[in-house]
Length: 102
Image 1 (cartoon, rainbow, N blue to C red):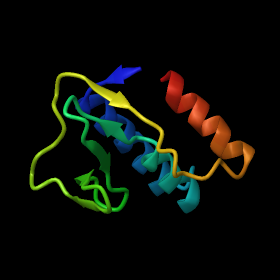
Image 2 (tube, helix red, strand yellow):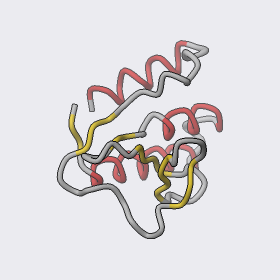
Image 3 (spheres, helix red, strand yellow):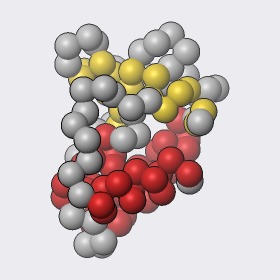
Image 4 (tube, rainbow, N blue to C red):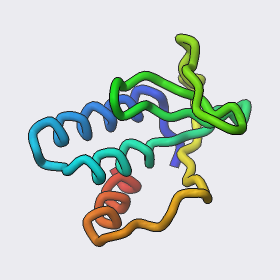
């Protein structure tokens, strides 16, 4: 489902608040933020860093700072990286389901 940068940033802010309030443990928080990865119209992968909320982009081998740039504000595509291991427990699966429909 297409989303925009503002939507992804709002989802991140909600997750960070839940983590800071103790509603999410560290592993669940990190996995949920990592699920906010997306790809812009040029095919570049982006994600928000869980520790500081800054955007990083995938350069083909590692995540690098976005140099102040964020993905195109028009339309982006949420993706699931194939390299990610499957969820380990039901809580993470439920979180993924909630994230995909919100």
